[in-house]
Structures are given as structure tokens and as C-alpha cells.
Length: 81
Image (cartoon, rainbow, N blue to C red; front, side, top):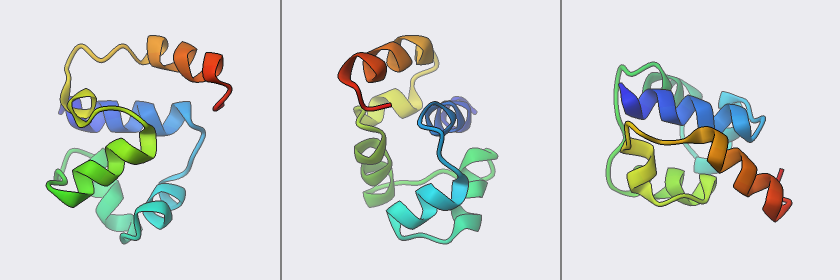
């Protein structure tokens, strides 16, 4: 469940919709929603693409101690949000 929580936090930090991310990853929005709901998890290329989209190592997506407040500060400092 950490993955689903982290995924949602990252999306909200970037102020994107589920449709935005599905479009960026070229997947069906229902597939993305199932990841965020914890009903399924991506693997392989999809996990890589998510990490690339959010500009984090893929391990961050799976990390139960992910500090999204720190990530938000980093993004603000970079001027990416």
C-alpha cells in the first residue's frame, strides 16, 4: 500500500489529474487509477516511466519512509512547481 500512497502524493504535489498522468504514460486512466487505489501495481517499463515522470528514483515509489514534504521543497527549489 505504500506504493499507492506515494503515487497519489506525488501526483497531488505536481497538481496533476489521473488523466494527466495516464496521458503522459500512454496508458488507460483506469489502469493508473487501479495503481493509485492499491488494486494493482505497475512493473517493468511502467514503473520506470512513473519514476521518470515524477523525477524520482523508482525506489522512492516503493519506500514506506518517503518524505513527500522534502520532495515538495526540492521541487520548489528547482522551480519545477
